[in-house]
Image (cartoon, rainbow, N blue to C red; front, side, top):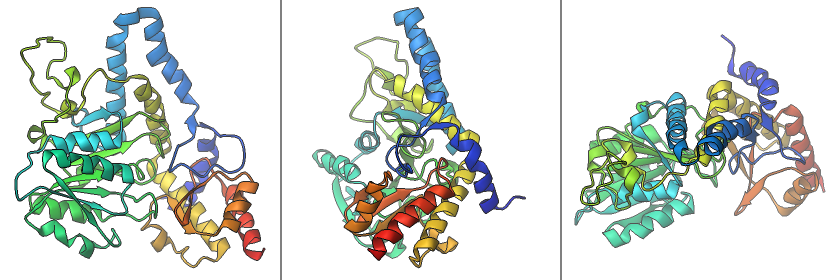
Amino acid sequence: MTDPETRGKHAAPSARSLFHLPEGGPYLIAHSVGCLPLAARDSAEQAFFAPWETAGGDAWPQWLGAVDAFRSALVDLFGGEARQWCPQPGVSAAISRIISGLECRPGRNVVLISEHAFPSVAYAVEGLSRLGFRMELVTGDPSDLSNWRRLGDPDIAVVVMMHVHSNTGILSPVAELTAMAKARGVFSIVDIAQSAGVLPISVDAWDADAVVGTSVKWLSGGPGACFAWISPEVIERIMPVERGWFSHANPFEMDIHHFAFAPDARRLWGGTPSVAPLVIATAGLRTVAGIGVAAIRAHNLDLSGRLLGRMDLGFADPGILAQRGGTLCLILDEHHEAALKADGVRFDRRGPRLRLSFGIWNDEADVDRVADCLRSAKRG
């Protein structure tokens, strides 16, 4: 068997050629927007534009077939069954739709979320206060189970956890938290926006009630193609406030006097679906699946460790890196930031941390270029 280090290095040269790389220096912002797959334009032409051009309003059967292809691609990467997946316009929208569909009971209405979560998720949860839910932020390191001790209290209704936290790269102990939630009757939602496509994920391996994510980052699928997975054990409990004809068990019934929720995750769908983003995202999902998430992760760890080792930052140990997502969140000063920008390196900042993500399109030359920039700034 090939070891992970060798497998990652062998995957990179051929995988790099599957993407359009933006102009400039090393592209290190897969945590924000993944590189465009070469297959995306052909996918959009064949599955979206061509049916529209040739069939006009009669393109819907082909368009809905393309949506089914998106759901099948999610199954191939993350498990579950197609009926358990539903496209969503955004992660925040997915979370809002799911929680709004749950019964809010007096004395059990608290939604737990880490203060390190992506702010948009908290905005969505806070907006549900109109329905009687109350958000409470978990303080401290979200990887420390002891900081989630409130999960055992009787007033907790829902827990929302980030698989990977965008500002720090810290992983939540998802398996432990979802198991705790299930044992206490707490509804659990896992956000995989920052892990999908760089960390191996199986929804069947967790005790989660719901998993939500986006295609725009490591999945290289562009904006607008988000998704939700719902456990079949809980689907009938969820009756979203927001609904539309595609939430209907039979969208084409067209009876204004009758509505019945779809029996599966499609009840989260809402009105007329956006098709083009899903078609584009399917190309990204298939590209990532073809490379293999395990290979992408191994390559990411190889390059991340190489940079940290060259920078003498003291935490390049593979065991430590494995407890983080795919993004290096480094506390570096403005001199380091200026040096990277001057050399055209594509990265971003969140608070005091610079965020750098090595994708499958990066190589050791990119690492060395970044390291030389940072070491030069440090000497200066």
